[in-house]
Amino acid sequence: MMIDCHTHWHPEWSGADSRDPSLWLEVLDRHGITHAAVLPTRGMMDDTLLIQDNNDIASAADRSDGRMLPFCTVNLTQGKKAIDELERCLDVLKVRGIKFHPWMQGVSINHPLMNEVCARAASADVPILFHDGTPPMSLPSQVGLLARRHPKTTLVLGHCGLLEFWQEALMVLNGCPNVWGCLCSPHPGALRQIFQNGPQDRLCFGSDFGFGKADLLAYRLGLLRTALPDAGVQDRILNHNPRRLFRIDTETPAPAQK
Ligand SMILES: [Zn+2]
Image (cartoon, rainbow, N blue to C red; front, top):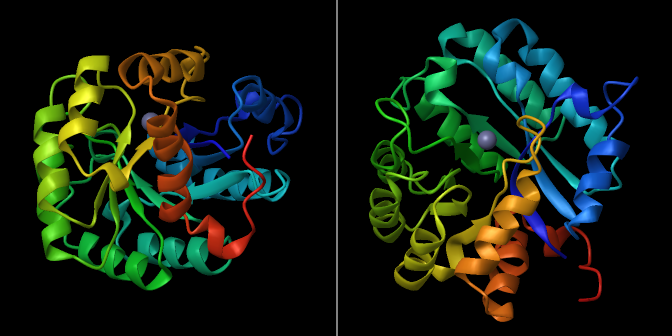
């Protein structure tokens, strides 16, 4: 099993039927990725498409034979409407996680409703993945402060600080046992430092595949393999850790290792 913990859904990957995942899954197959966390794209960029995007991702995931782990998003500036949509996504769509892109969505990590979201995510036992690494609204330290206030909620740094804030991400990972790091975007030297000096059991891989047409899976798998060539380390980051993050072992037996 190889899991990509940071991909995006966009109808441009689906051909005539906007909920058909077959073309999208073909790209995963090309790279040996068996499962992927699938985050929204259009719903983060445009609030009027948010519900449709949440529905499309859940429908595509339903047709993926369990390979796509659907995430939803909500926009907290919508107040109660956002909480209602979150409840629907958790209870009806059975999403496996919640995604926030604070600067793109124009919502602070410290928005008052984020406390309610954290409590709900903890009770549903799903992680919240944040875009991080972009000031002023998406810094790892801001996620870290939220994590301190909600120690029972699992939060994921979706980019481990991107290129410029990976050291801050490393400090947050070491200071907050409920924060995971998705190795998606730091350069190879930073990836190595994060693994060597960070919590090795709370790191996973992400490619950002689906966000645009570039072959980000090839690129970011290449970075990971350059930075951390040890097969056992890669197995930990691509397989064992994310299976724990998504409780995959407790739901379906893992396929035999290749
Ligand atoms: Zn992304």
